[in-house]
Length: 218
Ligand SMILES: Nc1nc2c(ncn2[C@@H]2O[C@H](COP(=O)(O)OP(=O)(O)OP(=O)(O)O)[C@@H](O)[C@H]2O)c(=O)[nH]1
Ligand SMILES: [Mg+2]
Image 1 (cartoon, rainbow, N blue to C red):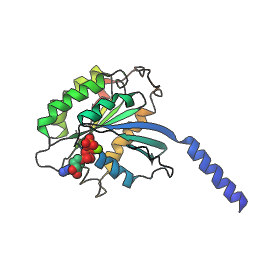
Image 2: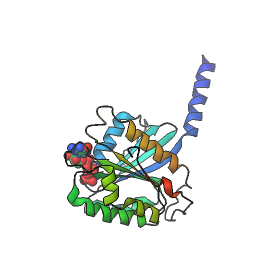
Image 3: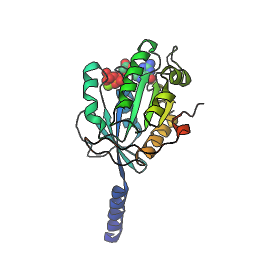
C-alpha cells in the first residue's frame, strides 16, 4: 500500500514538474466577449486547485500546459494597463465582436498598436472572431481583409490564426473543439519561443510567412 502511494506521489510530482507554464493575455475591445470566453474555458478545463484569487487571473490545465490567463478589460481605462502585461505574455488571444462593424476601424487601430509594440511583436496571436451567432457577423475571411491582417502580422513578425466562434452558443453546447484546437496551436507556439523576460523586449526569431495567417475554415 505504502509502495503504491509512493509511486502515485512520485508520478504526480513528475507530472507537475513536466508541466509547461504558459502565460496568455485575453485582449480586445470592451464588450467583445473576453470574460464570457474565459468563464467558458473555466467550465471546460480543469483548473489548479490552488487557483490564485488575483483579479483577472485564471490558471487552467490543458494537456501538458499550465496556462495562466489574464482577462484584461477592453475599455479605455483598461487599455491603458495592457502594456504592463506585454512582457510577461508568451502569446495572446485577441477577441473581437464580429458583428460590431462600426468598431472594426477601432479594432484595426488597437491591433496595429498592439502588434507594433516591441514586447508583443513576434509572439503568436489567436484571433477569436466571436459572436458568430449574430446575424450580421462578418466571416473570418472578411475580417482578415478588413483588418489587413496578413500585412500586419507579416510586418510585425507574428504568427496569427483566426477562429470563428460564439462564446454563448458553441462553448455551452460543447461545440468547442475548434477553439480548443486554436488554443493548442497557440500553446505549442508559445513554448517554441524563448521565455519572456520582464522589461526586456522578446527577441525576434525566424518565422515562415505562409503560416502567419491561417484558419481551419479556409
Ligand atoms: N450574441 C453573443 N453575445 C455574446 C457572445 N459573447 C459574449 N457576448 C455578450 O457580450 C457582452 C460582453 O461580454 P463580456 O465577456 O463581458 O465582454 P468583455 O470583452 O469581457 O468586455 P470588457 O471586460 O468590458 O472588456 C455580454 O453581454 C455577453 O453576454 C457571443 O458569442 N454572442
Ligand atoms: Mg471582461
